[in-house]
Length: 212
Length: 150
Image (cartoon, rainbow over all chains, first blue to last red; front, side):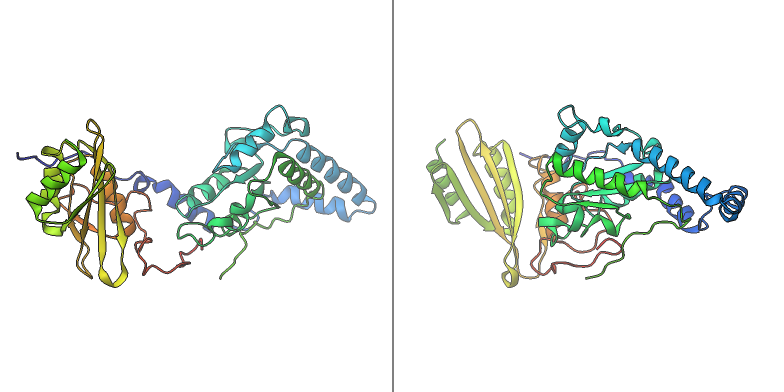
């Protein structure tokens, strides 16, 4: 019996059409340092700070703005692996991060925080970086679990990024495999403490360069 | 058909050693009779269900392609094995017999670099299309750098 080979019609791979991914990366690399700050605003605040007694005003304004920032950290709902289950438990009613002002939000354009919950593969890393780039400044990142911290048990796998801090800058590392919701909550509280001391530097955050 | 009848049929047709372990029949053939064994397993032995296809890297002794097909009505499986010559990475494709073999053979190509001849669309399936090397080969070094991410 002669069986004819099927000829399936398969469209080309999707990522070859992602031209805007390359364009976005090019735009990001060409962007000037500190181009998000208005020069006028900068000179006014500098003058106020240098004015005798003016530091009191800027310090109070900074404290107020940082209080506002840390009281409404919106994490983008971005689950990568099994850690995402613990992250969902943290978001849900039993642990309830909403009492800390955190609303899990389904769009990176409205979010301040990315919780990298799980193993980052080399195939996923450009997409992760793209979502991080889509978030407005100032933004923070929490690396959740062993895999996101260092690669974890898959560190010597052929396809795993050895720590998400090689892709995006990370503020808080939460250890555990996976970390229970209490650990993640502790990490989020540490992040809030960090945000309370946040100061605008105008410097673009860069990933941690590591080679081994 | 029972597993023992299947073994006898394979031995008569292919003059190759086949073994039975419970409901599992294992048959090894040369690579040029791989497609013929597939057709025989489907048409004569009634193995309609293609379970999986994979490969084993025996280093200097070459690669081995393994596929398991099952006759779900009679309740036995046939594990087909073929040894490729050392340094050789070409094997006939089973897509003409079981369409479900397509993605399995793409994965096998992805991980071991085996070119399945007659496959209609042999591309990488799991790794990115621009990946270099085939990671499950024993010669693929652990911690092969992949800039800029590792």
